[in-house]
Image (cartoon, rainbow, N blue to C red; front, top):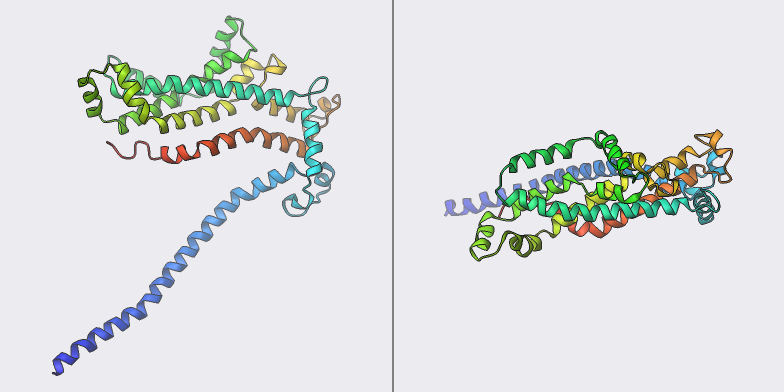
Length: 324
């Protein structure tokens, strides 16, 4: 009987010890979680605080900025009237009644959208061919694609300028849009997508069913390439919108055909803060609030594209993660 009673006492003691140990472990986990959250908040603040100050600058008045007023990050001097005035100055930049800024934005939209469309049209079939077709010099073509992907864009600017100038198209938008359609990184993304998400057995089965290579691409490969199309479109649009050296070389000769990337540089160069000599002959004066507003407006198309493609981008992060 004593042995029978001893066992429950031992179990009760063990359960009591576990109950005492439980809160300690949970406290340790909570401390670690708090440390991780605090670290992430600190890192996020490093990036968010300058962005808040930059956006607030677009809503401030130049006199307050020069006087150092406005409080922390200038949030105390934020006003919608300041934005209206700054926009009138930015939009008034240019000969006559101005309007160069919106013209530059329209030019950037043209070359970025057309370039992204051409990049998708070229990259998806090329990536499929490199991944699932077997032909001579396939590895050579893939190596050249990777070489072109890592090659700096500045290396190609002068040869491209000579070619465009040879056909008399210097200063026009369409050559820039066509050249931006050359997007080796998109070909590589499509190649990885079809290599990892489209089994070779599926291709062989389609061939046995009598489909041609073109039919396999359009009926089998294309329906499963939505994430790859979204990734190529997003990265191509961002690369085209932010491209600086190619528009600078091909479009600088025509003021109205410049893109926003080189247009912002011209706004900065015409500001009294950076070039008082040039700014002295201009009717429109651009200071920090105006330059901040122009830069912020130039980022809006990128934000719209990112938000619109976010659902596909989140799915596309796992493209190629699992084979089969």
